[in-house]
Image (cartoon, rainbow, N blue to C red; front, side, top):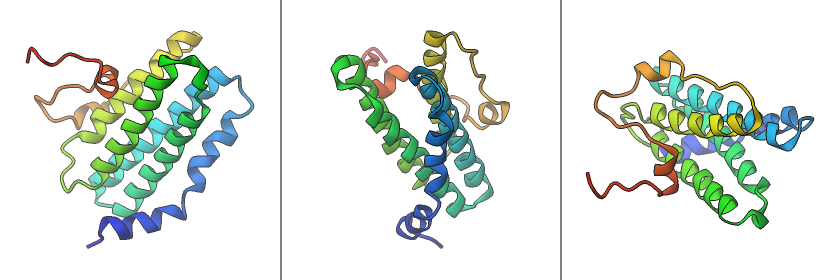
Length: 167
């Protein structure tokens, strides 16, 4: 059985797949690059989810590492002069990195990838709204894997902006 350490070392060799997303998006205007990178991020989370269901730990970790590279790149692209917007997006990207690695290290994910996918999709669709680009829908494979009774993760939860004190 592989440990997280051995899973992690194998993933670094495949990190080039995460950087390929930047090369593909580089020819587009910056706002559209965000959408393109979010689409790539969603694809990697979906692959991690599929690999987890198939019990392929090395593939799962490789997909999580590629998603991490994209999130780090998105974080690095933030213009700190934009104040709270950049600060909140940075928190979101860093929270997603931590959450993805946390889910990857879980023995039984119980639909956690689906929750993260949903949160990323919500963020992607927010960028799409700003740019007048079509929304992306939640794939039925991801919706079917959510555990009944588990609440949806909203972008407000990742940013720490939601008020759950009344629950």
